[in-house]
Image (cartoon, rainbow, N blue to C red; front, side):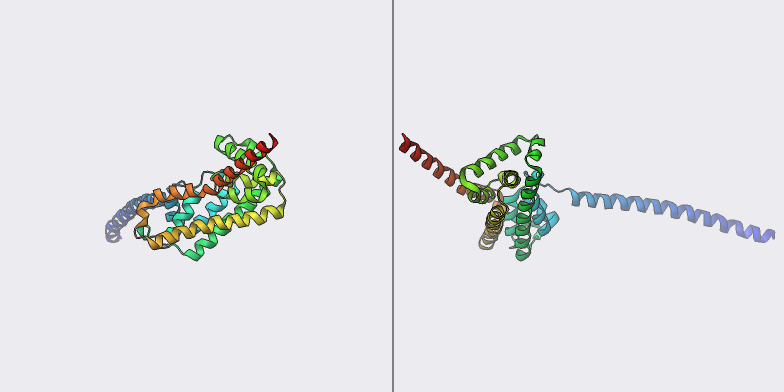
Length: 257
């Protein structure tokens, strides 16, 4: 019996040592794995929502649809980069972007159109139900300025022109939809013209980016100046309409005088 006990003692000690070693190694590996996994997830989730390239690299085509919906349907989305996102996404469909990112053009067109149209209709319904209460709760001067411009567009140019033109003006395209609902613009009128304006805006900018990326090699190097030009060009219809309206008002004033 003593012989068996003497033989068992080293085996027991060895098993204890093995258990402690295994526990230590397991905890170390688990900690290292957790740190590595956390850093990887952190880098994936560190997305700059104001950067079109960052959003596209993180979320792809799905991100385009979500941003279009948020920017046109939810007041909290007024700061999102709609114009630059559409143009950059279209450019990336040609494979011209850095990092080898390439998007599917048909899927992108569908996501952009669905997000833009569904978002605008959602914003209209929210405004129709909540009225101006949502804007009153916001403390953003930029948002209130956009609301004033949206109301001015609706009053000056009528429902059809205002709804279409608003698509091309940042912030205004966010607040005009709930504003139209709050002002009781007829559902059929709003739906018709928001579909027209939404398709021209979302598909037009996307295809413009695709066309430019297909015709000019390494065009992504000049992306920021191009986006600035796109934003300026998108404001031309509104500027032309404002100028025409002022001329008409001046002529009418002259006739009355």
